[in-house]
Length: 319
Image (spheres, one colour):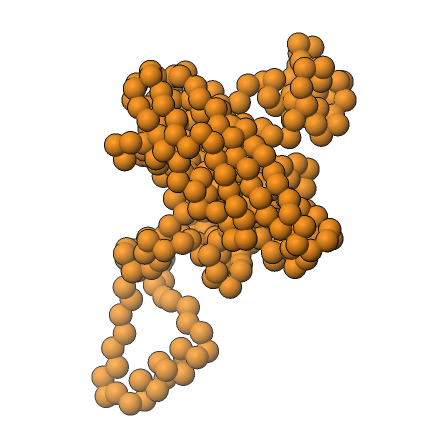
């Protein structure tokens, strides 16, 4: 037999008792909650979510993107099967992961010729850094200040835009091997990962992976004010319209100068590639502050805005 009821707090109890004592005919009703949209600002970065940089490889900006997780419920079967209804509920990153994976699966279905790196790139360069109020996404764990890419990556995923990103940053197996070589992985360790003896460190070794983001780390213990420069090389592939032209738009992190060359990329056909270089110059900061900006390649018709986050941060952690 069901027994309708609600749970209330001690404070709410006092209010109910006052109402009962002050009314000749007290009436109560139970109404199911409805979902109300458009009133709350979303999304925001949860206070419990993991933040970058990656301790194993800080040269590659992490996280990549953010996705819905908090208060999004998923069911799972407990090991001991003791739940009264046969399953438990969980939310948080346990739901953000399948959301992001689902988007990647949809992109794989729509573009079976794309590599995993191209799919990740499409999700990152089309992500939004703005919430529903068109203001920067807030970080709950940092007193609701604007979230940095170390908290949200490139931003919140936008699946529809990711289907047609304009440009992608692709990565080859050798590129990954070059990264592993720069991290001092041994040949045997690399073979364990690649399951092949085709790759080794004889060809190249570089931390500058062809990633759709940029991170410039500095040692905050070096002389404050010392000028530092990081140079990056990136290669983009045109997966949008055939003949097209892109112009660069730079938002430099506070206290930095960002130079990009060339400042325009011209493509004659689809799947054509172009490379460009980025110099980020900044002064060392004894306070260990994190600053961030972006590089956006804007297609001449305005159809595509291919955005990559930039982060300048200390190697030993920032504020």
